[in-house]
Structures are given as structure tokens and as C-alpha cells.
Amino acid sequence: MARDGIVVPADPQAMAVVKKKTQSSRSWILFDATGQGSFLDVDKYAIMHRVQINARDLRIIDPLLSYPSTILGREKAIVLNLEHIKAIITAEEVLLRDPTDENVIPVVLELQRRLPQLSASLQQQGDGKEYLGGQHDAEAAEEDESPFEFRALEVALEAICSFLAARTTELEMAAYPALDELTSKISSRNLDRVRKLKSAMTRLTARVQKVRDELEQLLDDDDDMADLYLSRKAGSSSPASGTGAANWFAASPTLGSRTSRASRASLATVHLDENDVEELEMLLEAYFSEIDHTLNKLTTLREYIDDTEDYINIQLDNHRNQLIQLELFLSSGTFCLSFYSLVTAIFGMNIPYTWNDDHDYLFKWVVIVSGGFSALMFVMITAYARKKGLVGS
Image (tube, rainbow, N blue to C red; front, side, top):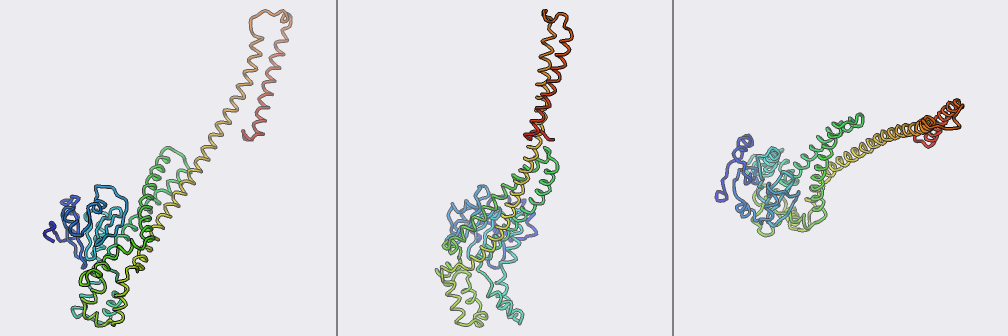
């Protein structure tokens, strides 16, 4: 391990201090089957040689490059890129990138807690500390324990699902009150607030959708799921290598003595069956359901935003109709006054008319009649508008 780079024992309490010193994009943390972690500061060629992957796969988890969420199964490794969780999982160890990131530290602690679960049980039995309760615990671990790579994969899936669910909950807590406030009072401030929340929801939905699509793609292809069985592939190529269940029995004579020959043969048959992906399928289905539930919550929020937009548009249309009504009243009044002004202007011009001599009363009657006619026209236009629904009663 020393030839691959600098190795520093991992201390979760000192990660805040180490973070200031290891800002390089080459910072890694290595977990073995016992859950022991060590910091590595190596280049990409050392990583490629260690886990036997090509440069294209390593670029997928490069933090300087933007790649969508991906789970790739290779011959001897699983390349994992789930948002901020960028890792390489083999049958015996986990390489996690940027362990000092604040979003990755919980994943580091969870790996330290859950990876050594089976190893601790076997070590306890090997030291002769067996008792009735310990035997039951060991038997339960023997029945329920998954391969190393599946335990590491489960930690990553659980972390990303919890992370996205938490971001969705935060968005809901901010969005629903903002939308309710917008419906009660339409203002530039509320509109801008909802616009920002909708943009954040769109980005979060795309992230959740990509993780969901990746899990769905794996579930739809049994060959891709079979590629993730690293312990089984290592056991089929070399019976003495790997960390599969067959090797656990061989490494523990006490455990092997308590297991019948028939059960061991049955277990070996299951692990050698390359078409058996039931265990991984159940694991992926559980987190697929969780991420799908998160996506449904975002879909519900989007529908609520769309309903709010429809309600706002209805209110704006109502205000627009009121302005149209006011414009109609003003136009009708202007037309009637224009007709009245036309008549009075004709008779008010300083032009001599022979029929105007000794007929002063005629001007007064014309003014009165034209004024009455203008008022009648205004009433008729208003009544017609009310009949057509253009003006409220």
C-alpha cells in the first residue's frame, strides 16, 4: 500500500483539521473488510492500477468534471457516482473520494460502522468468546449478511436517498408557505421568491430523476446486476480469493463445524449461479421505492405550483377584464360627448345663416335635443354591454 501513495490512518474527529490540508482532488479514503480507514493521497494512475479500471471510468468520479449519477459494474470493481458520493468498490475494499467533504463525512462514519459487522462476529468466535446469545447473533449474521460490496453499495444508496429526501423536505417547507402567501398577495417580492423556489425544484427533480433512472436501468437488466457480484466473480476465478460466504466458512473452523455439509453445498451452489441476482434485486428495489417516493413528492409540489400559477393567472385575467370595462365606459362617454360637441360646435360657429335670423330659440332646442340624444346613446351602450356580460350589473 505504501507504493501507491501516502497512507494516513483515518480519524473521523480529525477530519475537520485534515480538510484544510488535503484540498487536492486526489484525496481518497480506503476502507478494508474490517472497516478500518486510511487516508490516501495518490494520483489517478495508482488508483487505476490498484482497482484495475480504465481512465474513462475514473473520469466519471472526477469532481472537476460534471457527470450524471452512474453505477457501473466492472470485472473487479463497482464505479459509483451518486451526486457527492464518488467511490470505487471492490470485493475487499472501498475507495471513497473527498472524505473531508461535509456531505461525505456521514458516509465515512456509516461505512466504519457497518462494514466490520460480520468480521467482528467471526473474530469474537475465533477468540473463544462464545456464549448462547453470541451464537444466535453469529447465526443471524451468517444468514443475513450480504457480500462486502453489497454492504458498501447499500451505505451509498441509503446516504444518497436520505440526502435527496432531506433536500426535498427542506424545499417543501419553504415552497408551500411561499405559494400560499403569493395567492393571498400578488407582489413582485412574492413572485420572485416563488420563481427561485421553482428553479430549485426543477434542478432537484432532475437530480432525483437521474438517480431513479439509473436504479431502474439496473433493475431492468439482469446482466448488469450480475456484473455487480464481485465476490462471486472473484470466487469463481480463484477459490482462495475474495470475501464471499464460501471463504468465510473456510476461514472459521468453528463456524464451519456447526454448518452441515448439505447447507454448505447449497450455499456454494447459490453463489456459483451467475443468473441469481435476487439479493441485489431486492436491495435495489428497496431504494428504488424510496427514491421514487421522493420523486412523487417533487411531482406533487410541481402540480401545486402549476395550480397556483393557474390561480394567479385567473386573478390577473379578472383585473384585466376590470380594466377593459373601465376602458369601455370611458370610450362610450367620450363618443357621446363628441356627438354633443359636434352639434354645438356647428351652431356656435360665427358664420351668417339666413335661417338663423330671428330664430334664437332654435339653438337652445338643438343643444337640449343633442344632449338628450347623447345621454340616450350612453345608456343604450351600457345596457348592451351588461347584456353581453362585458360590464357587471
